[in-house]
Length: 198
Image (tube, rainbow, N blue to C red; front, side, top):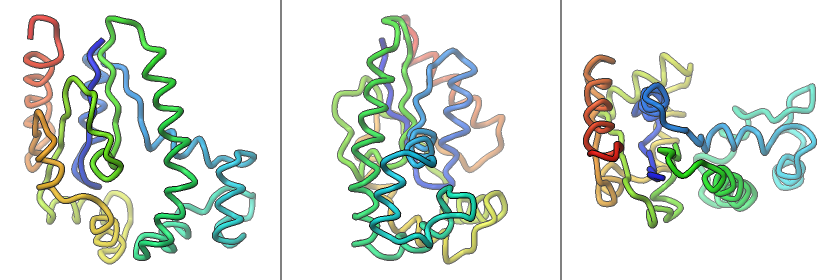
């Protein structure tokens, strides 16, 4: 098994890289998807979030209002830390279970934005960092996710810097071009680092 940690700041294109790796045969464990699973109605994490932050974090049907929660925590370090104490251990446990269940010949890719922030950069065969300029990231998030510039900058400020991520990287993919350029870099990564002959 080849174990890969894939990380990058919000808006860098990390999820697109994960999808390109999936197309080549990698098994993807997505921390964001797990984060959504653990806060579904009826899950203990959602109950703890409501207890910590109030019923204003719920939508009318009882599901988590992710936008309201983000607005509450991303410019407040104490509140963000409180949320992380609820969610991060559960995400880590679920990811560990999924990684451990993979077949021996798998290329397992853990798609995790907060690798550096959570000090989870040990024990990987490869750490792949996806980077993009701040301007590109701002534009993608404001257009693609309908986020305001203030929201985007708050999310960026809550994450590690490019320099901090680069310090743990085995491979850096720069995503300032088009999809063809990105796919070419992923193809080279797969060929050189993630296949037995690489």
